[in-house]
Image (cartoon, rainbow, N blue to C red; front, side, top):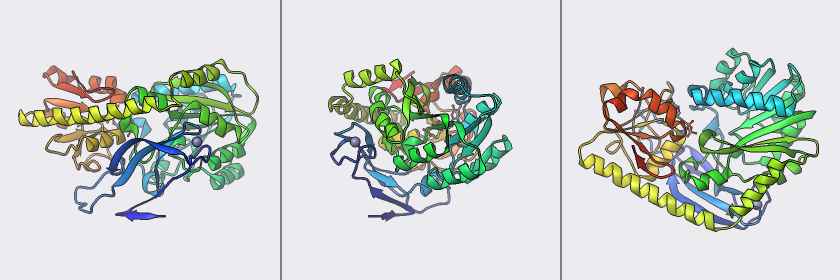
Length: 415
Ligand code: TYD
Ligand code: ZN
């Protein structure tokens, strides 16, 4: 079934994407939500698409996934998100490149492919270390930036077709990276098989995905949006890799974007203490059972309610509230708290493409950071809470004036 709503179409997903199981149970239901990265022009009066946002858990393999799949062309072909805006992220990329070089034992000048590499920020860390860099990403609007940075670029979704093109034009890859993209993919078998197609026999495939354990432990429910089709644990990922001749060599938890896991696959057979320890952790934390998810659902209700109450009180007291970071998670949080521009007057964001637009669902205007000086708020809601230190640093004038920060996750705090 293909359902059209406004310009969005989506279809239900009734089998587990990892094991094919059909015993799926609801863990989070956020109701109808807009697309979190679909920024609105101020003169656009058309109703926005609203699509169910529901997370299901597979009772057979413990993978979690959305109940629907939105047509990817609606979300990824012009992408407002730019990795390079955050300096925290650039440092993360440099450390990643150093680590991958060591673990994969990359030969000097080896070819590296980054799938879903956005504006080439991660690849630039590899280029800086002397590797030959290749990028495949569907966001055509970002390709000129990546080419200007010296990367070979193919504008496409990753799959069999892109892998054939890569194999024809480019050498076999010693390293394939996919950071924050695997969770966007509906057909994981095609994705992995296409990676196996371009990977050299001695090559490594490294992926970074948000980790379901972090999502649940830290109540990061606003990282649930339509782009994120899957919420992974290690165990189901190992099963997926195995089907494509890829075995786990190393894994670790990473702090970026609220907490993820970084998993290295190779074609050999490995005995990794790190992999064993994480599997034990998942079992001991009960992540294959119901109870952590029930607690998670209660936390979500609490945060939504508390935020709405606080914003309503500030409005009654005549205080001005602005927000920082027109992130996708911010869109979900504001919609979940039913905020609009009477509660949060504006959002500042340093991304030029987002400025002058309205935030999805809430239609709160997005402005450059300078608005914090011309219309100083009393409270600043940090919507990109994963970059809280960087944002506090950039807004020191606001806090010097006595402004206070609202941090929504993992529990609502006013500092
Ligand atoms: P981010 O948390 O990276 O992602 P998502 O959209 O997946 O939730 O988004 C952070 C947003 O905050 C992004 O629009 C860029 C913006 N931002 C700034 O404008 N200035 C900054 O200093 C930082 C750290 C982020
Ligand atoms: Zn399953």
